Length: 191
Figure 1 (cartoon, rainbow, N blue to C red):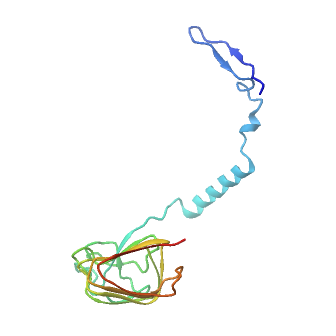
Figure 2: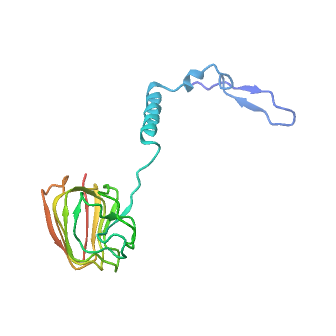
Figure 3: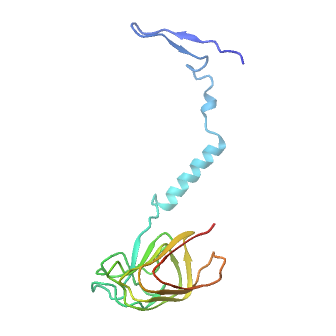
């Protein structure tokens, strides 16, 4: 490779000499700095995405199944997930539930620690779920029927005596999971 010659620049008085490579101190090669078609397209797509999405990013929320409205605690497992607005963001169970069906990015709780959800059956529609936790203070909870679309990597934590999930979970090699879980954590991940 041929060494490049350098051109000394005139230093200001009292400053060390500065040396530049040819054409770097001028705009002769400015077309090398121009964005190519791919860069322009990428910038355009990013701008469109921000405009369409309004610049917001989906964030996971914690939801609690709550059938007793504004009374402290969570009531009894019942109602229909996907039809009834029984999901609340209040971990004490005092706020009025307002959410119909959370997203696959959300963490879902059936009770919260020692403040449990009384035993019962929740009928499942066509719904989404991220991580699911059955609290230690909850009675046996049954999720029956319907379809639960889970996050690609989700964790189901069972801290109470027993729970049953009898709902179809798409994107899984098993057509239906009907598991009676007792005091264990189940983690699944699939591509």
